[in-house]
Every structure is written in C-alpha cells, then in structure tokens.
Amino acid sequence: DAGVTQSPTHLIKTRGQQVTLRCSPKSGHDTVSWYQQALGQGPQFIFQYYEEEERQRGNFPDRFSGHQFPNYSSELNVNALLLGDSALYLCASSLGAGSYLAGRYNEQFFGPGTRLTVL
Amino acid sequence: KNQVEQSPQSLIILEGKNCTLQCNYTVSPFSNLRWYKQDTGRGPVSLTIMTFSENTKSNGRYTATLDADTKQSSLHITASQLSDSASYICVVTDASGGSYIPTFGRGTSLIVHP
Image (tube, rainbow over all chains, first blue to last red; front, side):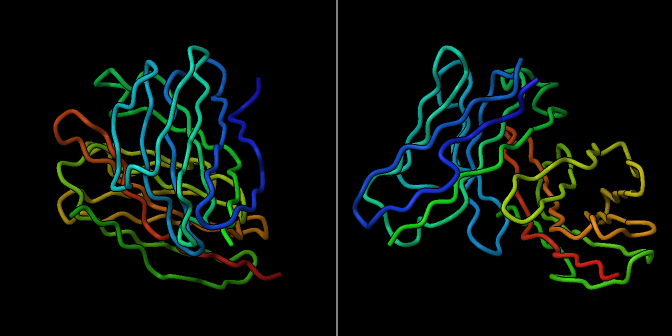
C-alpha cells in the first residue's frame, strides 16, 4: 500500500517564475492538504481539497492555488515566485473532510515533501 | 490568533536517558492535539492524538499528556535511542465554525548522543 507520494523531490526556480507541485494521497484517502515549511519552522497550512474543491484556506496569498483531480491527487501552483517562497512543501492526505467525526479525529499522513528553492 | 508554543527549542541528551518536551497553546475551541515526529527532510509522522476528554496517550516509549484546562501538553520519551533524534512537533486543531484547521508549533529539535 503506497503512502503519500510527492513530485518532484527538489526544484530550483528563479523569482517571477511559476511552479507546480504534485501529490498522490494514500490509498483510500479523499482529502489532501498542503503545507509550507520554512527552514527551522513548523508547517503552515496553505489549503485543503475535498471533492475537488478548496474547502479551507490558511493565510496565503492568491498566488498560491491548487486543484484536486477525480482520482483525489492534487496539485499546488505558485505564481510569481518570491525568494520567501523557498521552503519544504508538504502534502498530507486524510479521509472524509466533510464529516464532523473525521474533522475531530482524522489523522493526516504526510508525504516526504518537495524542496523548492527560489533564486 | 491561535498559537502553539513549544519548549525547549532544542535538546541534547545521552542515549538511554528520558526527556520531556512541552507544548502550550491558545487554540480555541479545541478539537484535538497531536504530536508528530519529523526526521530531517522528511514529512512528519504522527505519534499520538488526544481529544479534550483524554489526558494521556502512549505509543511505545512515547507518552503524551494533555491538560485542557491549562492548555498544556507534554511528550515524554523513555529510554531514548539514537533514532529518536528528530524534530517533535505539537499540532493543535481548532473546531471553529465546523472547520478543522491545524496550527503547528515550531518543534523541538532533539539530538540523542551515544
């Protein structure tokens, strides 16, 4: 049973460019959340996708957008990259974001992350 | 603003010793609290999860406690091993308006020396 997978593992971009990161959730999971983790910091919640819609969003600008596909995989897009966007981007999958019990107890399984460096 | 504060920021101990990591939070209303272990360059892995009605949860050599009144949690590691060297992150999820957005602490960096 494959866990959460992310691609690519590393990425180098220059300021102003656009980037797309990809995530495949754990088998059986239907909810994908994205996080940004700067060096030495805890992960910061970007947004969550469930049923192909953005359900919740953290305090991130519109330059950060996403998409969820019918097979539950997801993409994170960042436009007009800034130096401060350099970070480890983590994807986490879980089950049933729409249910109250899932929201209270659901466990998120994290992928290995994509290390983005903006020069 | 929801906040999760962890202490100490870093900790160095000898193999075989015990240690306790602290987490204070201001998240309200409270849904659940998790402790994660994150190896360098990897994604976090869940160790324990507790809701407001639980005050202790164990997972092998890891024991987490929760005091929902004082909004404090601790993670106790018994008989530390070299493989325990990692960052330990406290995550508190709030339940306002039916949403469940997690707030992550900065983590405590633990180094276990032989």
